Image (cartoon, rainbow, N blue to C red; front, side, top):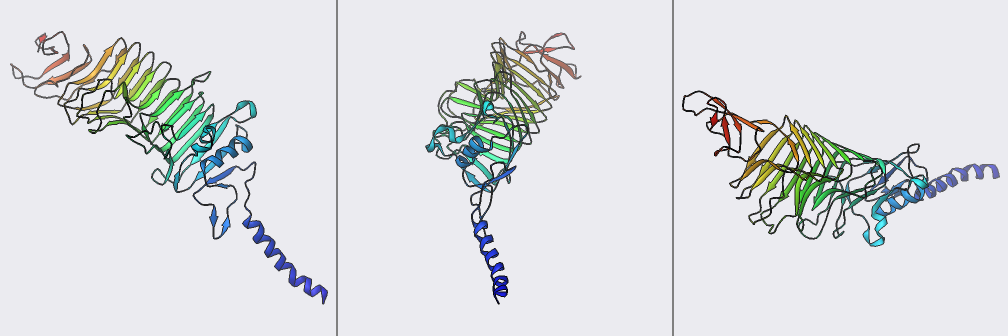
Length: 392
């Protein structure tokens, strides 16, 4: 009889123990994959290796997991909006690597889609929602990083420090003032690769820069980088551009789109351009559409270089519209290599450029034949007619 009772009780005990263990979820210190979700409960049970807030995840990564080249980590992020906990200390919203402690990076963050997974700066004031410090081989995909305090006091979206490497695939970034900016350069330039992504910048205070490279080398493929100055903005712009490179910063844009939307009806300085390089910064643009548009009488600029900056833009197309002055190339002590053949038209385009950089075939001529014109600002009308060998 005793043996029979034990046999009956054993399955019941096992079931109770299973239910207790399943309800007491754990985070393994060496987990290869962890989750960031709005809820770690499924059918009343708590999921193992799961976090519900950015702060707890970062504390575990820095203090316990410490991923590196031999022990990488994947963070699977579910649907929802995840805001850093700024109130608990500034380090809690930063991904701060510590190579001396064995934590060098090697983390991949994978979301559920750019409109479904959002790392947000809600309530963050003027601090970027994502700060990465002294890390390498960090990747983000299928998610959005945004600061929703647009036009109020929110600033930035991504601040990158200390060099290293990063990969961004199918990512949407929305930032104020500067959507991406680099501080505290590393001992060697960092490398950042963007593919199939959108980086959107909005003016804040007197700054309107979407992507600012000051230290590292960034490459864009099949992506869009845009700067927006709305008609509600009133004031001057100290610094502006969709892509801006200065100091040691280098930007490459291939098969992508660079956009500057300048819709403010107020006066502002003409420091905003689709692409701007200065103080040693370098920008390479190839096979890319460059759009500069104003619905008002604002002066617009496509490419701007000054004080040793360099821009090389070849095999690209331009769409420029404004009732103000349209400048394709603005050079003040820099180097811009950007030849362009405009579409043939009855008369040449009304633009400002530099000598020899622009060509166009005009069809309305004195002899009835098409003539090839070359931009030459020494001519009164800025164009030299190669057929008659005189100013147009």
